[in-house]
Length: 306
Length: 332
Image (cartoon, rainbow over all chains, first blue to last red; front, side, top):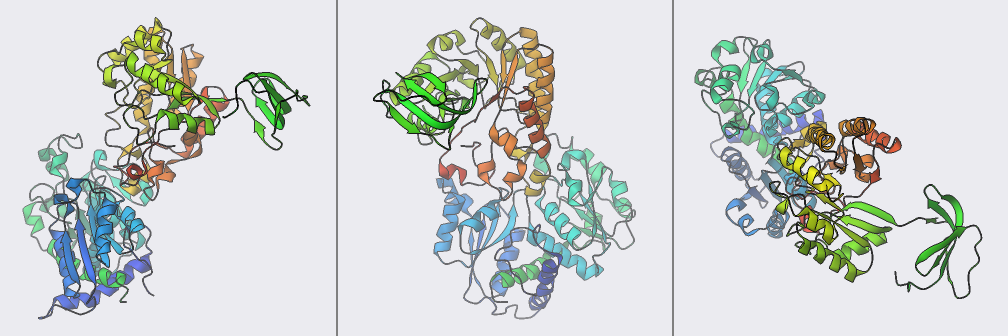
């Protein structure tokens, strides 16, 4: 099959087959990153613009490396420091970039729906690199890629997503992606961090971490946004860490060989104990490595070169 | 519009709807700016202009209890002249305009300014609603007596609800002397903080912060309790939740002096309209669920809700073409 979408805005509208196609396409690019000369000419002559309205090191660097390894020309544009201050709208900024003949725009924006708005207003392909609390589709795809590498089959795989699901685009994209490919998804955390109607997305809700971890094959820890303390989501970092932090002791409740994932950047000693983050169960750095391959695959599929 | 007020006009062949009086085919005779006869097969007096309304409905001029004209302060969105013209084009001959202009209509000079502009426009009748508190800041009462004398027909801090219950109590008590209804937009600003659509499955899917139905319900409950305490006339603007309808029904049954309004969008559209980050469906109170829509319709049917108003709230196109969370609330 071929990939029929012009943009990658969210996981929600994709089929399981389309998700698998993106993972399979990424396989061939993973090999490129292991070579001495880490470059293929697939996107030579194409222009990729990283348009990041929010600070990001990991995702922006990952997209930049992915585009460069495909021989595309890459521009990084962080409007927070330039035009936005002057009052330019998102669409006007994007149209200016488009006027410079950008083929693909990679957008990170604090507002949910920003990528949808952009895609409606420009002719370039748009990749959503995170919009507000909505979605972060490439993160979910690289998470699935990592799981497929380690666990082979998604069917019946039990995955616990732990933490502030309400404010997490990573959680939303992963819930959509994992349920589509047949995994059983649990969300674990206090109700203050669970969005209204989350069960209707096909997940089970757990208030207590120990119960949520029992028997799972994969644990995805979400980053605790420390600035949310004082917003009545949780009383103190100390209590959150005691109740919902992943420790070596708690990890034993999961299936033997369970994987620990985290989208980064991690708060050591808050949502994840340092020894767990560095343990053999942790695939946190594999996620980062795979991120480049998956983004190469997505850039390739959207460039029309496929 | 351009008829001389003294011209005699006969509207023939239409279906006349004048609730409680006429509902069917009839002719309407207008003489000297007044309706002088309604009935079948009226004869056209000499020199009368005859308007053929065959296949059309002939209705009395509508009254819109809830509009936002943007003058003074936001003339780029709408002026009193353009707002009144829009009203008349839609069949509304009278409108009540909310005070959230800049400056806020919290004193007689602003009220007089609005009335002057409306007179100059010469189309719809414009009835200003004055602010409850100075600057609609929810702290000190505006000069409600002066506002009333200048021509305000009600008081409201619409859009910026009075959060302090003591201030609201005093406003209700004070308003009794001037026989003005106190109109409240019921929203607990703490519960709704940051929210930009109904809190529910759709907001969860879109990743947008939600406003729970409870944000309206708790303020409806508070306002009803204060209306009962003070005996003031309370009018609740744009009910959007099943809970509100239930509480108003109960309050009316117990004799509390309360009236309520609903807007067409709240009984015709649901939160689903926000899908795809459609900013034209962003409004406050937000579009709710199907169950709420049904409850509003039932409230209209059984008289719990007295009035349909529009909450006409225009914005400039570029303001609605922003990211959903950044776009202003309002429907035209």
